Image (cartoon, helix red, strand yellow):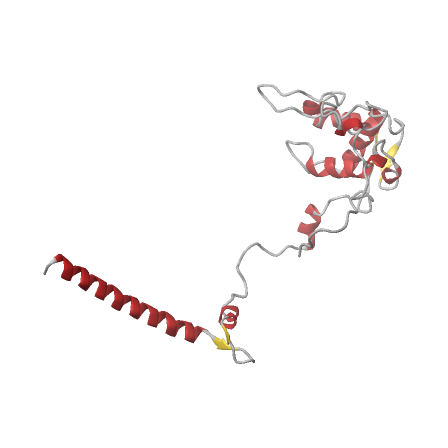
Length: 221
């Protein structure tokens, strides 16, 4: 058999196989289709019927487990928990759980060969205007940039200390927040912070943030 004959035979075999594959695919497609009410084929019905009732991912969550993670506090302070603290108690907690990163006076720590930079927490400068957008070198702190005292509580309670986030009790958190606000000259050192008093604290930068009420643009479903 010469090369030309072999080439013709290969083309013939391939054509035959292709024809059988097309026929098989055609009949499988027909079997998988159903007919919609208007008489048109509906291939979605078989796919929907085959969907499993459960994908066996995750596990049920009971109210006790959910309560341990549902601890966020928004600017309104509506979900602040029971508890209280003042700056005197807050200094003790801060010294034991926060100062190793943020410094004894909340001054922050620059990065070195052993750790990343930890932010400064205390500082009111600049007291006039709000020039952070014009000068990126300005350092943002709780005292000069944070808009809501309630969300200071939220962040400290959820994320601090960095070595054991979420382990501080509400009393400890209120106390640390009271110390931070006192050191930033926002509240009196003797003031007690709790769910009722914290929402009344007006941060120096409160009026520098406005709701994003822009309208228009694409709608996302």
